Image 1 (cartoon, rainbow, N blue to C red):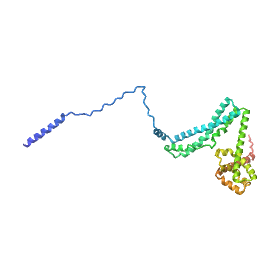
Image 2: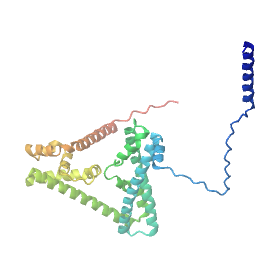
Image 3: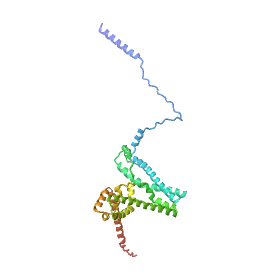
Image 4: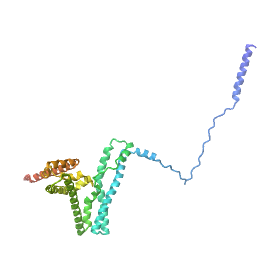
Length: 320
C-alpha cells in the first residue's frame, strides 16, 4: 500500500468519527421544578415554639449589668416593703383595740401606713444601691445573676428596720389628725408604759447577768444598777436596732460599758473590772462609737454656748 493510500484512509476515518459525534443529541441539565406552597388562609394560626430555659438564660445573660442589679433590687424591695407594711398593720390593729376607731379613721390610718412604709424605704434603697453596685463593679453580666443570688439575704437598715414606719412623721402626724384627744391620750399612755417596761426588763436581765458573772456585793449591785438602768434609758433603741433580739451574755453585760471606765472603776474592784472588759470585748466597737458621739455632742454644745455668749458686733451707723 502506497503512502498516499494510507493518508487517504486515515483522513476518511477521522472525518467519519467527527460526524458521528455531532449526530449524538446533547442532553441539557434540567432544573428541578420548584415546589409551590399553598398560601395560608387569612385566619390560619401559625404555631409559636416557646423559648427553652436555656434560651431565656442566654437572653438574660446578655442584659447589661445595671439591668441585673436594678431587677434584683426591685425584687428585694418588694419583699421588704411587704414586711414593713405587715408590721404597720399590726400597729393599726393595736390602735383599733385601744382607741375603738370607726371605719373612716381606720381607712385614713391604712393610707398613712402605706405612705409611711414607702418613705421608710428611701434609706433602704440608697443602701442597697451602694452595696450591690460596689460589689459588682468589676463583674460581667454573665456572672452577675449568680453573684446577686448569693447576696439575696443581705439586710439593710438594721435588725428592726421593719418598724421604721411607726417612727415616721407622716404616721405621727396622721395619728394626731385622725384620733381625738381622748384617743391620743390613751394611746400615748400605753406606748409610754410599754417603753418603760422594756427598759426595766432589759436593765434587769443585764444586771442579773452582770451579778452572776462578777459576783457583786449588795452595794456594788445598787451602784452599778443605777448606771445600767440609765444606759438602758439612753441606748435601748440603739441596741435593739443594732442587735435585734440577740440576747447573748456578753452583749447583755456590755450595757455597763455605755458608762465611762472611771465610773465603773469606782464601783468594781480591779479584778472585776478586768473580768468585765474581757467578757465584753467583742462589743467594744459599738460602745466606743456611742462614747465618741456623746463627746462630739458635748463639744458642739459647748462651742455653741460660747458663740451665743459672744456679744454681737456693733452695728455701724449709716450716714446718709
